Length: 187
Length: 277
Image (cartoon, one colour):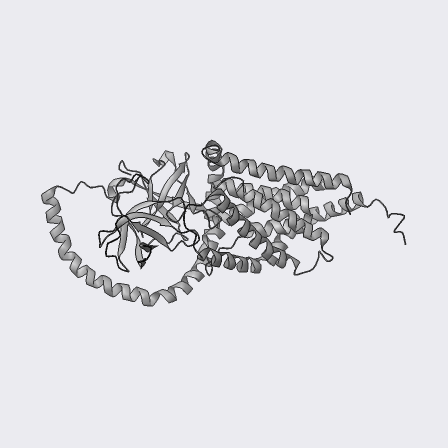
């Protein structure tokens, strides 16, 4: 199996396991008013490990699964996670030190905050008839804090799951992008 | 770093994914994807149920820690409630006896109760993943007699109503969802109205009474009215407990209610499938 096919299969399985874990277990837990949400963490980690394409595609897949399995308005979560995955991939490409040990924590917290904010804005745009409580803000902050604690273990689990397939894919892309040094930058 | 071809391809894929998401949002309004949702629920329902069973011990372990912390804070409030209830029991016994005699005289014993509504016990397999939607999936469907609109309760009180059914699974819209509306009344006073939620705070349901000059006090009990309203057709049998009044906003005339059922921690529920449900 080619590295691309291998990584696609692993991303597919990773998405399904993430969504089942989230909907069957984590969504039913309330810790200090917040609910752990590993989906944006997994999307951000995939983006950090595989780049913008992997991040955006896995974001769409995980978001679609969540929308389908929880029967909420289709497309809202997938749209949110496509953007999260894309920008996590951009962080990997633009950051001078993509292997920094605390980068997944910062990106995970930012991804959670961005996901919850985007989701709330989309819900407002789609029309909310009920009043909105200020408690929502507290829940968002609690979830961001809980997710910050989970960001590093989730990133480690995603890296382990993608494992050698992600590394092979990275090497293959590097070879394709830089077949040789440019004569202008040769030492 | 990337050649133009790669950048173009990446942009095309991103545009395709964003466009697909927006098309899904548009199509899913109304009943556009109802049949697709039913098909997905039929396929994924058993998988979710299996995952829920496997993950139950972990969920219970984490929940136990949270419950223990919460329980410490609840002790004082529960002691006060116990003392109030003791007083009410004494008053209630005499009233119940008198009421039973009067009901017999007026032949009112044929009112529907939970026991006459053919309750079907179902297990909660998953719940919505965000704070904006409050729905759960249960492992009973049309094969068990469940139909759309059936009320759902648990041991503590009203939970919600069924909004989507397949052969073996159903989706339940909780009373804390923004789309939910229940005709309710305060048991100890004449106040009645539509009980709705405030997004983001599942412990704060809001009852807007039809008549403002009603004497409602904290700690009074809110139950289903069981009548039909023009805006929200009530499919709930009368007198199912919903929650307790926590405060009354005299400026806005809103009665704040905390639900009896812990809707964040639902393992099993009962679906009322009887004829009046």
